[in-house]
Amino acid sequence: MASLMPPIARLRFRHPKVVHALRVAVGVLICIAISIYIDPPYAQWITISFLVVTAGLQHHGNIRRKAIERALGTLIGAAVGVLILGQQQLIGLSVLTYLLIAAASAVCAYYAVGKGGYTALLSAITLVIVAGHGTEPIDEGLWRAVNVIIGVALALALSLAAPLYATWFWRETLADALRQSAELVRGMGPGAAAGDERPLDTTLQQLRPLMPSVSSETGVPVSALETIQRNLRLVLAGVEFSLLSGTVPEHRDEIVRRFEAIDAALSGTSGAALATAPAVADAATARDETGDQILLGLEGLRIALAGAPALWRV
Image (cartoon, rainbow, N blue to C red; front, side, top):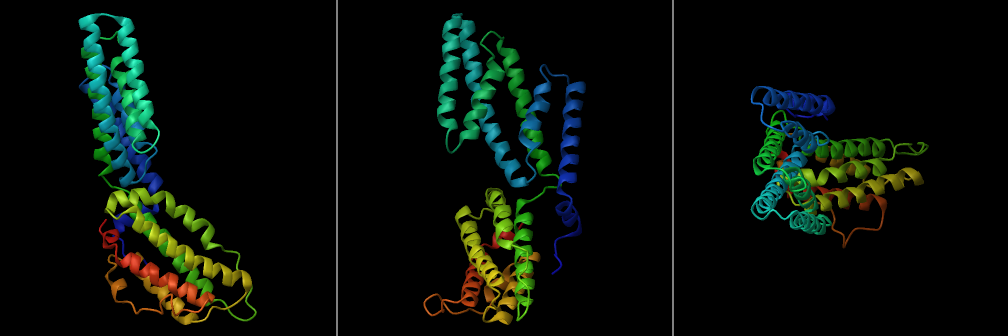
C-alpha cells in the first residue's frame, strides 16, 4: 500500500539522518554567526546548548520536550546561580558560597532520580555554568545564562523547520509489520515452508522508544499507545505461532482483508475508515484458536487506532 504522505514529508521520512544532520549543521552555523556578529561574552555556550538539546534527538516530539525541560532547567539554574553570586558579593564569605552551591546541587541530585530528572540535572549544570565556584561577577554569570537560553531557543526553532515527526515513523513501522504479516498469512498453506521473518521480535522493539515522542506530538496518552501495542503483540504472536507450527489459521481471507484495511488507514491521511470496519466475534464467544486470536487482536487494534484520530494530524 503506497503511503499518501505528502512528497516533501515523504522525503524527510525516507532520509531522516540526512535531514537531521543538515538541520544541526545549519544551527551550528547560526550559532557561529551570532558569536561573530553579536559577539556576546562566553558565546560558545550558545553552540554547546544547541548541540546538547538537538544533536542526538531527531524527532520533533523529543526535541520539543527536551527543549522545554532544558529551558525550565536553565531558568531555575540561572536564577539560583545569580542569587548565589549576589550573596557572595554582598557577604563575601566564600565558605558559605561553596556550601550553598553544594546544597543546591544536592537538591537537584535528589530530584534528578525519577520523573523530571532531566530538568533537575540541567538545573545543576546551569547553576555551575552561571555561578562557577562563586568567584565570577554577576554580569558574567548573566551572560552565560542568556547564551544558554539562546541555544535552547534556536534548537526549538529548528525543530519546527522541516520537522521529523516520530508519529510518521511509528505509523509506518506499524503498517510495515501488518503488511508483512498479511503476506505471511497469505502464503500459508499445505507444504509451505516456515518463514524466516519474525515480525514480532523487531517491530515491538522499534515502536516502544517512539511512544513518548508520539504522545508529545499528538497528545495521545502513552496508555492508549500501549493498548495499540498490546493488541499488535497479540496479532504478531498469532502469526508467528502459525509460521512455527506450519498451520493455517482459520478465517485466513478475512484476516488478510483486515490486515490490509488497517495498513491502508495507517499509510493514508485519515484513520476515519477504521471506525466503520465490521466487527468480529468478541472474546466471550471466540474459540481458542490461532485464527480467532489474530482476528481479536486486529479488532482490538482497529478500535484502539480509531479512538486516537490525532495520530493522523501531524
